Length: 396
Ligand code: SAM
Ligand code: MD0
Ligand code: SF4
Image 1: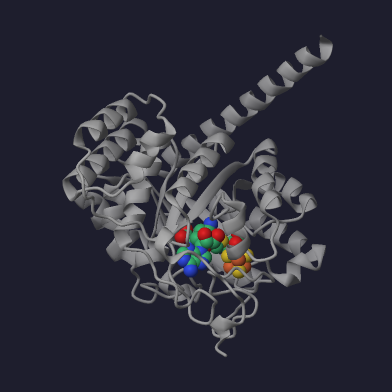
Image 2: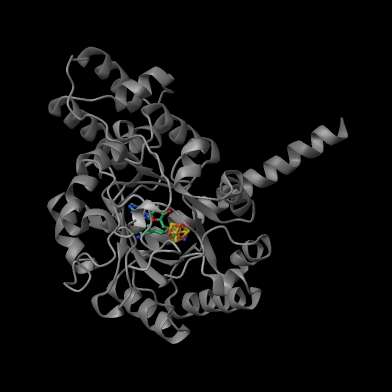
């Protein structure tokens, strides 16, 4: 039996790949929905489903156009760039979609030293990125020994001091004691993707993980003053209804950054032979996110189709380019562990001409920091408002 056969996964092949071409035309109602979207009026569930339904290419182009107008409304032509530092590929988990799941013997694993990590962040900072995304698998070295988390907290502090850049932490569902110490260590963002907001599908993707705990940690991170990123996988057996639920969940949790990534099959995993959706499905999903959450950051990840896929995602309304990795760093991506890294195609330099071609530009660091600081101030205001209203209720 091949490795892929060891874990029974029964995802719905029909559901995760949405047909892209429409049969009947729904032009008039699409127009009225887009009109509402442009005026930022709330949509009914049926209207969101309509947006997600198959479209003729010309209708789809209309959606992209509206997505770009909304991006322009909130962000002008500014695009933010995120450096990606996947510093440990060891993981205790068994996510069925992930190359780095614990039992996969086909992936190369490494755990970088502090020196190697600091070297990588310094060079990424020099290359012009606006944020450092410090990511690891749920490395047993840390998850079994709190002292190793201490080392990482110190590392974030040092990396921030050396580069002056905002920091994102993607370490999985960390213990509460670690979460509480992240803001003081310098973490501005906490990223933790649910992948789906259908608990039954979640169970098939993130085997033996607690759905509610993964969801709740983001609310706690926000209460501690961090910005949060939520994300979904596209093409893993979800229905269109599931997608609407995910968008509603992202809205309800008020995630500051919302992402969608197409599923890329990984060798040695249970989903190795599960089909990957059409690349345009990802761009279509990005556009829907922009339509429904116009003021949020929406990534175009180089980790899915590399530099070749960037143009379409930016045309669909993305305003952050993520997964920039420098060639000499010996660091890896997640969904595409090596694509374009050696060739220098995951660098700020490679991305810039694509931005220029689309009339976009790399934001300045000051512009990014001011966005982050503004959102953090909002968080503080919201929490003191909440406190005041709970005091009022208690006093009644
Ligand atoms: N280990 C931490 C965790 O899982 O939260 C941090 C890693 S996290 C940044 C890895 C993310 O990459 C997953 O949450 C998933 O959204 C995405 N990913 C992993 N494997 C993928 C694949 N085969 N195709 C597309 N996206 C994938
Ligand atoms: C990316 N490879 O941005 C990274 C990763 C983790 N916070 C992000 C999925 O695509
Ligand atoms: Fe581990 Fe994260 Fe991959 Fe899941 S997605 S196996 S938690 S690295």
